[in-house]
Image (cartoon, rainbow, N blue to C red):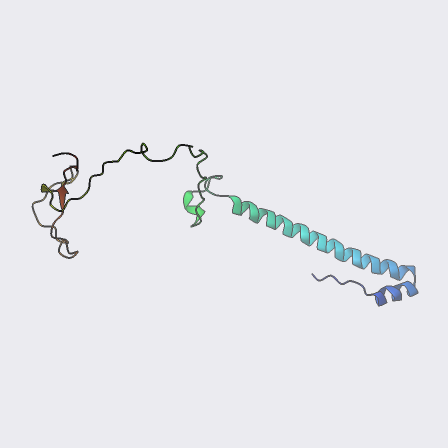
Length: 144
């Protein structure tokens, strides 16, 4: 609805015609204001309902998690404060790290206890440029 504001000329004409014309002009403006107020209240209720619907997620309603869509709710970061002590070992102490050597002392096939061992070559090994799955055994640098 468009609001029709009376011009100065309309007001002056109504004033010249008398009190009844001014009252009619005033009632016309008041009726328009009432309709606009009702329309505003209706739109406010719709807006409130839409905002409430947007604020719902599977965490604060009975909706399933699949209804959350792709926008995942970010988890809050840890409330723990960082410690004052520095990370790492003792100052001046050299650490020991297992390094891969050029010539390992041996190798053996990798086996998982959860997988049944099949004595066949793996069919996709050559497709990916692999000959077989093996692991190397390394000796710690400080021991013999």
